[in-house]
Amino acid sequence: MDNMTPMINSVTRITLVVMSGLLMGWALHHETRTVTLGMALGLLAGLVNFRYLAAKVRRVTKSAANHEGKAFSLGFLTRICFAILVTMFSVKIEHFSLEATIAGLFIPQLLSIPVGIYLGIRNKL
Image (cartoon, rainbow, N blue to C red; front, side, top):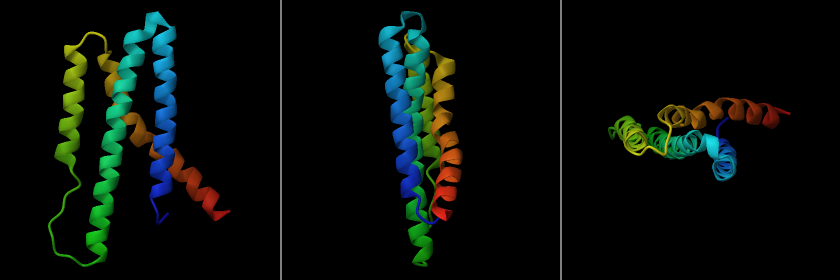
């Protein structure tokens, strides 16, 4: 798969659909409000981290293709600081479940695996 844009867009769409379902569950099911809101917060932060990583990978790929000698990074420190910030926000405010927030941070990255496999198979056929 040479072009990452369809995979990024598909993961973004799936994550937004899941987030909308979680927010609907937050509005309708009062017993699980903390879990659904924490998961939605984690998904939002995970999606931001996923898209930021994709932008950095594009930038690194472009500089490698042009044989530029610039030093580059994938923004690991920025992404981990953002995840810590969201986790601290979840701890500080009681309306968010910490466990659900942490789980939501990883879901967009994990979604990229089956989406990439599906798009790879679909493009070969």
